[in-house]
Image 1 (spheres, one colour):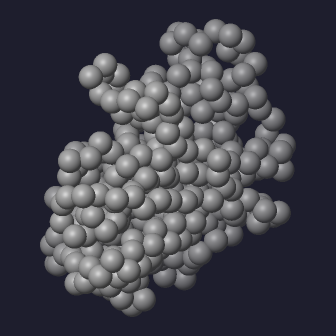
Image 2: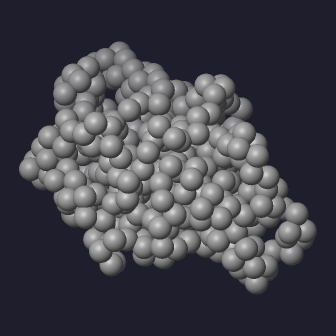
Image 3: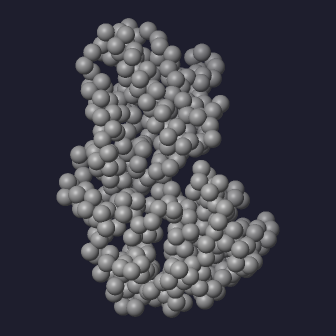
Length: 430
């Protein structure tokens, strides 16, 4: 996977605050050989890879939003955009249309061209989507902040807000407890110290029984301003609405360690194909009985909850005393219940760290994306879709496939989009 680099060539600025003059330069962001800051300069009549910007303002924005950039998955909100899009930095500069989105394991950098305006002397033209590891992303920020701070010192500019802020962030990163607190705040969609302390503390307390990774998934799926499902409520719902599962009877997959550095959809799809091959399932539809048997539970779970409409919008598996397991499926709709049960199966097969709660949510974390990819490929294999569409990608065709494989039409549409047979605008995603 290519590295991520933020470069700056220092230039002279004749006016402005000392920190602005000291750190003005030609800024370029690239992944490998792909420049995300490529722009057409109509005044110079050429395409630039680097654009004259404020190194100080970019560094401050990265430092202020560090925890959210690192740990907050994509959300449909203006507040999310402010923390993840460089175009919101402002300060009198024209910043690139670059969005930074993390799923916890990888960071996606998406550059899109600026709207054409004949009056603009500079127009960003980069159109690229690149993914780097979270570690590579952190390293790029560290290296760029170091460059800017060294330049400030070299120019004799001391005690700026940036220097104080980055020192604080650096200290927080070295403190395990503080880092955990900041990660939860970011997963909830808040800047440092903006979340309700009671809400964060509740998650910290729940993590002792449910598991840290599970609590992060709950936080990431909680709408900003709402309270995530607590351990007591989860236990009550599992008892009243859950179905027993016997994880000792689950199939096991070996030889998947080579996939640990792959994207979520690659890991999910490969594991689903491996399971179908191992269990000799072919490429056809899975019956409720077969799916339930794979998940080591009773087929009745796919028909609805025990107490009518489910109280939980979240599907999950909860490991209780003596390693007993209860499945809860949050949707009353059969095709959605099938999809969530397959996600739980994939989660169990692919998640190596053992905790009490195994959540299925709507968030865009690595774990949830991996679950969805596994479930889609297990229930509706791409080989079957490819053979049936044969150039016909109409809505009617997708619905016929969905009905045959007992999945929602959205699952089929996602598969076509992910394989490049439908434009991504066909999906109503953020």
